[in-house]
Image 1 (cartoon, rainbow, N blue to C red):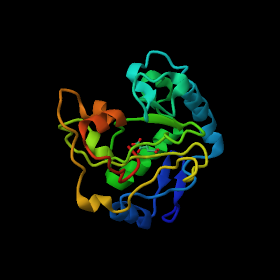
Image 2: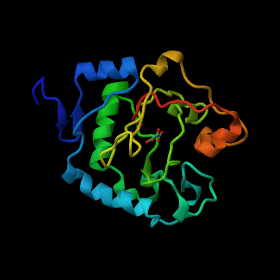
Image 3: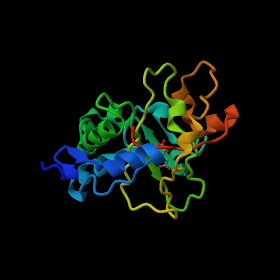
Length: 212
Ligand SMILES: O=C(O)CCC(=O)C(=O)O
């Protein structure tokens, strides 16, 4: 690898100093061609199984992120499969995971570890398939020793504002972290469901930087 080789390098994805600077300044950075179509194909097949509701035993880890927990699968708008690598361990260590780890280490430091994973699908013609504004940091478990976070978000389909692309608020981190959800006996992550957040009276906030 030469000093100037950027982008995909085996399991690594090498960032430029400008990209790292943008992440720290704006709270996000958009990276192109992190995985090839060929590399993505096997992961996409796994994603489809989750999103069709074919992975058993997920309980509340499989739900509609934009509706109540008791909504029927056929009525889901924003299909949410939490912790896919827990329910299908064979997907652990996939190429996207390895490159996301490389990116995260460059953004937040060598000790970055994978904490959380999630598959999401916004169904077509569902205006309520909206992921409420939030800041991921507000939902990390209480007492997390080092909450510094990079969330990696990979769009499997071309995404734009019409079909529900991820949106970020640049530099929102300058305001400091969003308030943590109120303690009521459940962990912050269990409160991350937008229905719960609405119940809790906490205003929806913003994703600052994407990758986990
Ligand atoms: O893809 C989206 O619309 C938002 C996803 C997100 O912010 C999250 O999973 O924390």
